[in-house]
Length: 135
Image 1: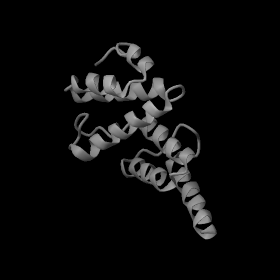
Image 2: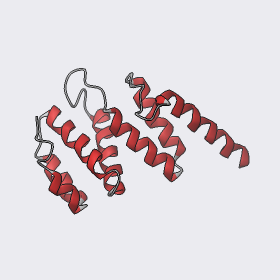
Image 3: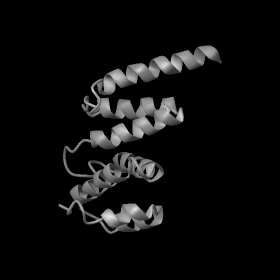
Image 4: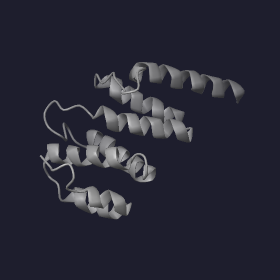
């Protein structure tokens, strides 16, 4: 398993190319997941575009490979929360809804904020209905 601080210098650069190059060197599923989780954890507040990029790449790995981070390993709820929140803040409610559905389909219910992914999904669906009614 990777040292949590091993790549911290990388997040400060805010360089997608450097992050992708470092990620390409990691073949081990659990180490790749640790890389993603740490990257999103560190960048979500002061490098939101990099956090979004990493979150999207993380979710993409679940669609391109079967069990990319090890047998029976579900997506990380924190990464999904960051991505759903980013989409919601950008007004991409359909994408935020999709991320919540990914979480729930992998039996990840807690979002770390109290309402859970189910409550969050319901709130997003209500927002979408309101916006659809205005159109």
